[in-house]
Length: 143
Length: 143
Length: 143
Length: 143
Image 1 (cartoon, chains in turn yellow, red, brown, green):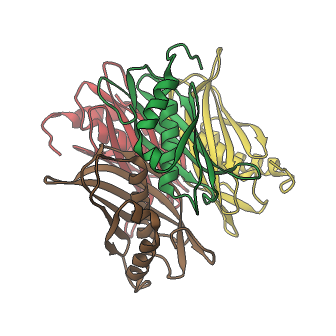
Image 2: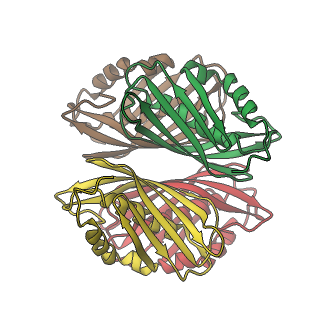
């Protein structure tokens, strides 16, 4: 996608991410920010990753991916999402990638995938499709 | 629904709930267990409830509702769910109710709703539809 | 729900329904229009109802339910929906009911259920949760 | 994906597709069958493609994609799907591609996308995520 309209979206996303207490609580790290794509990593996990944490990480990855394609003064509100849990979230490290599938002035659709990362190939543990609304002129959730 | 096939499901659900670290972490309490319906309460929340916590609480309420209608030796695995976030999760107390919409031998569909509870009428903040699989002979997630 | 803001929504919905070629094609009939709730009936069906017809009928019921709670000059666009297919759609007559779960200025959430109707009790065959956008000042799909 | 376990899945899928009256009704054509991926084309459409037809075509593409990765004597049942409608389905020709995201013994997750095809680049009009169950020993819907 064209990057022309949002020169410093990386900076804005990093700042917004740091303000999210939930991401800090679960030990999430923002490892990649591109136009229309965001990666979030979880490390030092123990046991099986809970569906709530998987949802939170995928929603954040999708929400920030949407955030990367909007005007600097707008923000993003998640309207709804669907999560498929495909394999038990076993492992210590996880990658959650959110990508904008359909940008839009009012509605943005983003898809996310979660992977357990170990010695072998990454294992797909979950997917999300989320519908986000672009909010202007009032404070949104991710803004 | 008929309660004949699962005399002590309340006891099994309470025990399973207590084992779930995630529910303890978010301060959730199991306040009602009926055949096909489970209520979970969150109290002493501050700020806006995060989508991950809403998802976790709704998934638990739906999963335990499904758990209440299966054989004692089976367990429940969430395959997928959809969450609609309808209002910001503002408040100190929240109720999450899961109900079995369609029981089944292999697949159970449950619907959940989350409410913010204050002085006035309860406010609907989120809904979930979840698809659960009945697991026999190996350990499931909620079991 | 209060009916004050949309005196003749029944008339508008009946007119809009009659314009929808798809509903005529599948033999659907609008049998009930209330504020926030719409029933659609299918009769003279043969064999098993196809997922596409179930989706179309549920989407229409949910869309018109949303249509019943908006301003007369606005219209409704379905952004997304989730359908659970619970039992094979066997039968000759089917009822699809759409209800507004969460009204809103921009986003409306509606839930629908489909039933096979025979001699015994109605059988739940499918459910839908749909997210609708209220469109003003340009032509929407259901308008 | 490895093709070893289902040598003649292409033939089985083509036969199953031809038996589906719904696909014939909407003028759908099976244009590509690979292991884990199926394309369905609609041509000679007029006006805006209805959500029911989009759902039916995406569900078929996803269902047959799942069908391509299972044992010859098993069949596929759609449990649930989510559809995002992204742009009005304007055009005369449409492509619907279903791909297996997660194969499995009991549950298969497939993703589908629908495109309007014209003179310019293909336009994404809809996406689906569907959850399919592998049925053995009794007749399924697509089988």
